Image 1 (cartoon, helix red, strand yellow):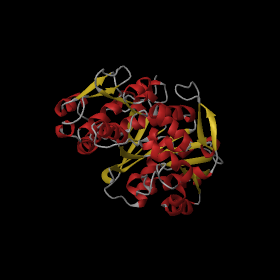
Image 2 (cartoon, rainbow, N blue to C red):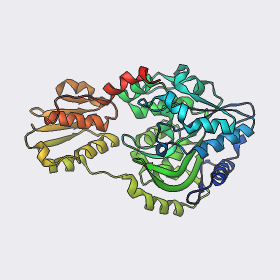
Image 3 (spheres, rainbow, N blue to C red):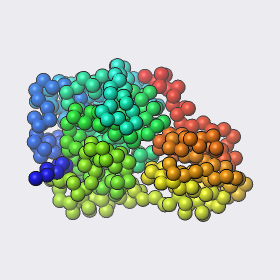
Length: 406
């Protein structure tokens, strides 16, 4: 008999009290066998929330990771809360002022800023993109990792959930390498490497963050299978899980179950989840126009398709939707070359999108990274139509910060 991965889902009342959040977290764990199913007394337990910036609306609710810290502390574990925020956030200032410090003090556990400690090179099993990755010593030396993401819309990835939260494990230099070659496969390499240590993932779904606004969801969700948890969460937020590359790739290489038919949901009826989906899906814009249709309306723009990934397709459509035909009246004929099977068009100004087309970089305006950033796509188009006189891509701004903002 095949045992399906289980996702526990507990509903919360609107604007829950602290004790209601604690009980919801505990009920999720109890549905999965209790804290003892994931750790033993004396284990070094790393609790990894998503604390990416100063904006609290973008971060894991402190009540969720506080609850986990207390539960595993009471089990007799040595608990550490650790994080490594986004590159353009000065981490020392964040850790000095952030509520993480208060949570750690109240729970009687440690809090660590990964950037102030060593990163260790670790070999990736059965590597696809990276033979080794540079990871925080706290990740390497922990016995158990508890991943505590939040539900958040993400400009580049669509959604940032469990798998995306693993990005905080690695050094800033490693992040640059992953973005440059393949962000999604890089995340899957992290997940593969530490799959056996990431015993539990608890999703903060009290609210979902939408461009800084808080959309009430009212759920705490948990699973030992972070891919299954991401698949169900993305469904609730209105997405087709197969359109999120992290879920699709992680499922392909056996990190977890990405198909909703392969998941057992406990605690909430599926009809209830469908109702939540119907309410919140409109906020998260899981569908996007065909960039070829957008280009037709603009004139002078051709989209050359070569089986692009959903993110690049979505991002090109998003950026082009912000232009009008007037923007292209005095511009040369453009070809936006999209997907690994596409080729530049002779006689046009080619915008070559993404690392998968790097071999054509010298035949047009190359937009680096995989996937290409919205900022960089707009920068390249503005340059091509004469709206700007120079191209400064995002990583050109971020790289100097790697050493500056520790």
